[in-house]
Amino acid sequence: NMAVEIFQNHRKATGILNNRRQVMKQGQSEKRLFRIREGSAVVAQDINGVTIPLVMLRPGDFFGSLPFLNIGQEPHSAAVYATNNMKIHAVDTDKLTAEYDRLPAMLRNLIEHQATCISVTSLVIRNFIQ
Image (cartoon, rainbow, N blue to C red):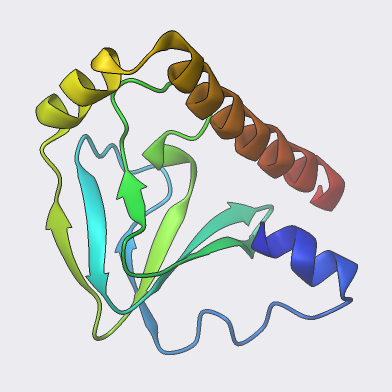
């Protein structure tokens, strides 16, 4: 989590969003899922008027809505800021959901546990900053 790293290293978050354009607004209802092909993005959250970077996304990473996970990391809870050269493509979420549903229960539980850990870490950061 980028915010934890910034806090632990006593770094300032200023400049991380420079030269980036907002491609998804916090609060925006987005039903699609995107995969980054080129460039990078930062997921950030506005807390009491301060934009807090949470994570850096690189080629191969995803942002948007995962229809089979609903644990507090929904796309409306943060904004996404992209480099000018970022190229993305939309993911077929129906196909992804079908693949997810075919996974053994143990792997689905691992995915859900990891997502919950990310969600809780972000919640702790938000509470700390407020």
